[in-house]
Length: 235
Image (cartoon, rainbow, N blue to C red):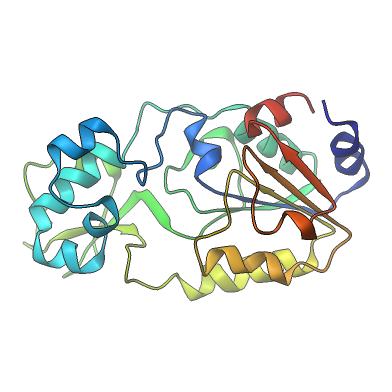
């Protein structure tokens, strides 16, 4: 276990965690960008295209076929990182989790203050009347999910070509600016504008945990190349 990491956590009571796809892949949720053999035989378009706003508009049924099969994983369970982060929040040490993931696993683990930059599969709204629908409604729909009013039900997920929620971004910036320790985990820090959030950090310790190097490694006070679940499990 990285003793320096343990020491930093034990001394701080103002920690913010910023996480990417790597936090979820350890719960068995594949990063949809990794095009596997199954994907390439089943779908005619690249994944980035299939989760774009224009594809949702032009090929709604194909969008839902991909979205339900490749982006919703209701059987996934929180891993050690999710569980430990929820515990640090209960202890009053962790102030917020900022995530690029849409699976709701942080909340499942017990985290309360979760800022979801890219939305959540668990929230869906009718584009016509605004009525709320849960994830089970989407999964159990045949073809295009329709509201009782006849409108199309759209996931509250940020698609390519859509902008991030400005309120969520502002709150994220606020927490990062005030944090004493910022832990960035499971992200290669290449997806903007989310990756730019790290530039707002003015605190004392920036910690990066990732299996591979990132462009921000040289700015960090501590870099750990390892599985994020393993690192948190040893806390």
